[in-house]
Each structure stands twice: as C-alpha cells, then as structure tokens.
Image (tube, rainbow, N blue to C red):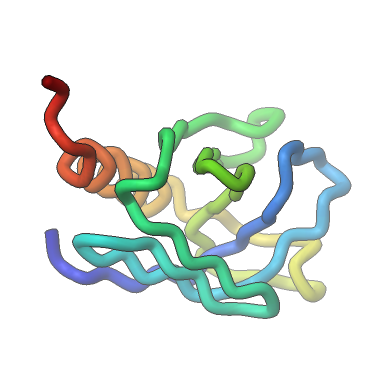
Length: 114
C-alpha cells in the first residue's frame, strides 16, 4: 500500500442524515493509520478499526462508515465542495478505492487469530 492523500468530506458521529453538515479536510492513508486533517483532527490506527463499510446515503453518493472503539466517522472523497460543506460532488470511484484500501489495511493490521 502506498501513502495516499484524498480531499474528503467527513463527519464524526454515530448517525448521518441529509441535514448533517460535513467538514472539509484531507485524508492521508498510510500502512498504519488513517489521518484526517481539517477543523477536527481524526487520527485512527488501522489495527484499532472495527470496519469500513461502503454505503449509499439516500442514493446521493457513496459514503464510508468507519467504526472504531471510540465511535464512528463517515468519509467521502470529494470532487468539489460548495457552501462550506453543505454541498459536495462525491467522487464515486475514489471513495470506493479508499474503502477497499481501508478494508485491506484493517485486514493486514489485525493479528492472526490463534
């Protein structure tokens, strides 16, 4: 896995609705961690993640639900963002790519079952 950086919309919380105001930031995925820099810094070690689930929110675009010990983070890779995070065009393919890389990283970071 190479180190990748993505322009993202993200939300830290347990539920996501159409009225949720997401934050704009940069997500960096390394072999050991996912770091999202923006108004709220999110640093997640891959070995501490429970999962990265790809889903569609009301058919408007792909989102990744990242669950970890302290809660949930929702992430989408953005093409462009308008109105301070209330509207964004989601990059369908790059969001799927980030989701696959996260799942692969989680799988590699977990110790083998005995």
